[in-house]
Length: 214
Image (tube, rainbow, N blue to C red; front, side, top):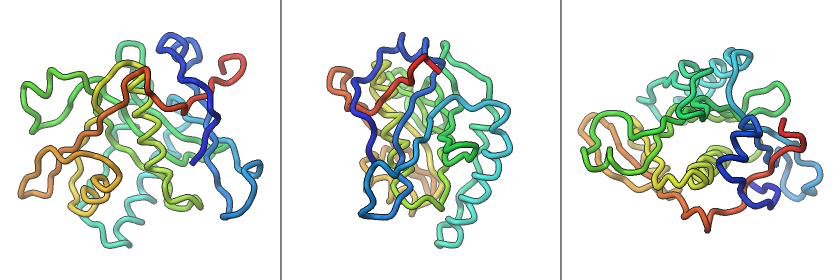
């Protein structure tokens, strides 16, 4: 996926732009020009997104089951944390194309969940929880793109790790192929993973502040 190549804004700029950042998320057939891609927005989730998030989670889990990926537990984090903030940062996020919710996730400003060591909990890390993307868009890498978006967002705040927990062996294997590092696993198909962010100075260009800060 491609986005406008602007330098990442500072954390202060993010705060002043109401946390709305634009990205080009192509929904086009291979070979079509980039100009035909539609513009989607990654922004803080609001009450008006609640129904769309709930529908997205249901559709995504059913799609995973149809592909033989079972044991995925619905994670309501994005729904539960609508309107919540951690040190001024939104905790619930959506990727929208017009009125449609194409993705959702929650970002917790710590290492959350059981299984992490005391030393790991002291490290600079955020937990990415309840990341769901719609199975219908033409590009199958939208979930990877959202992960990279949050990776850049964390780097802008000088956070070293994104961390998460999954409850499916196949999902864990897919995430490892996408660059996540396995940390620990249990016999109950519970897997802890982490993803190193870039140093702030080397963070890739994945941001564009909309004009007027809206």
